[in-house]
Length: 224
Length: 246
Ligand SMILES: Nc1ncnc2c1ncn2[C@@H]1O[C@H](COP(=O)(O)OP(=O)(O)OP(=O)(O)O)[C@@H](O)[C@H]1O
Ligand SMILES: [Mg+2]
Image 1 (spheres, protein in one colour):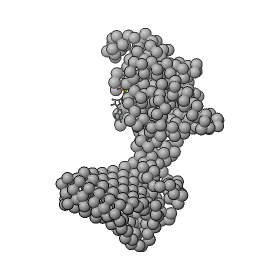
Image 2: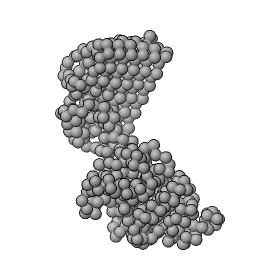
Image 3: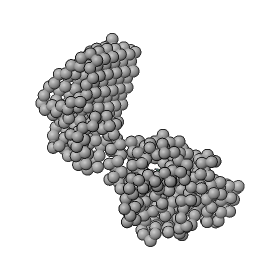
Image 4: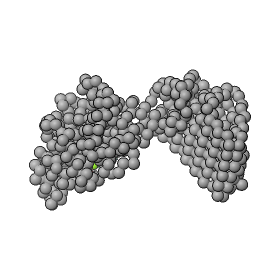
């Protein structure tokens, strides 16, 4: 696993045939990442926005599956508060058939934080038997927080499996009350539910102290 | 234990409870019956402090304290437990973690040290056995993917772990098969201490064969229209509610 922290930088990466790579983009600021995948390569990518100070962060990620039977698994996560802002753009291009891609983006926005996710997914005409999924789930912790989501699917092949879904909401009131009825304080119940919400993304990150510490610091500083 | 005086409450702008009076002494079991939509679950929601419900009039005293002034979690820590009619699924929150937090909050309130990991495990095993619950079930997320009957068992398991002073069982019998009903009712009777009180909401007299009520009440039109002993439940089982609503 390699951790990149691109600040006003652009990086090009090529995954050669059969190569497996795990990249973590931690707190990118105006970052551009291009990844070109050759046959049967596997890319695992995390893009984590856990800003330590008020900032406007952005990442623009392009992944091109240029060889057959590539695998791309991407997770995005943003924890924002105050007046912080982030934007994530992803472009996943399936140019050759038989590939697989999966994107899961989860965001937690408190106070008057703002976020946007633009997810472009293109399956070219010849990219038959492609499987591609995209989900974006957001929780707004304050009425002043805002999240804009724009999925953009362009599918030109006919024999593919593709899905996308986006939701933005609040914590489940019935679950919160159930926990309170068992004696768990409302604030603790909220934190437990938020932890659960983010757990699939966090569990997918390989164990790393820097990431774990920066997640905990940010998570604990959010007024839930 | 519990004193309800002239309790009025509404939900979604509609008044459901229109003057409930109910006194529950230590160790007493009260059955609460009434048609679908009569307001039985509304009463449990109001007593436990569900924020979706508004109390418009009346008072409730629980163990000498003003119940309505307490937050839902304070009521629970004080010893009020609700076995939900519809237990909630909480994906991503493990049953073990949930239960450990709940048990230790109750203990803290009682001035007790938190349980050690080993002591918690021992207690958990003991209560699982009492209710014939598999350990596997307890390794999953709270109620997630549990069958209807498993959810009800899980409610009574939580009651066993928390040892409340007053338990409200809201249709805990619905969804349980005959054997499970016996296990849950026997479990309930074993968990109960002599001074544990209960409100048992049910549509079926069958449960009351196992958990014998001292009193039976019928809710209609937002009020308790009839109170009696266990024979009232038998009579309702035979004759329905019509004759009580005149
Ligand atoms: N959020 C709500 N908004 C409007 N009406 C509600 C709401 N919740 C409950 N009610 C109404 O309140 C009334 C009482 O419901 P409640 O669930 O207390 O009945 P119950 O006696 O428990 O019935 P059952 O035996 O079917 O469980 C019903 O008419 C129901 O439709
Ligand atoms: Mg009900």
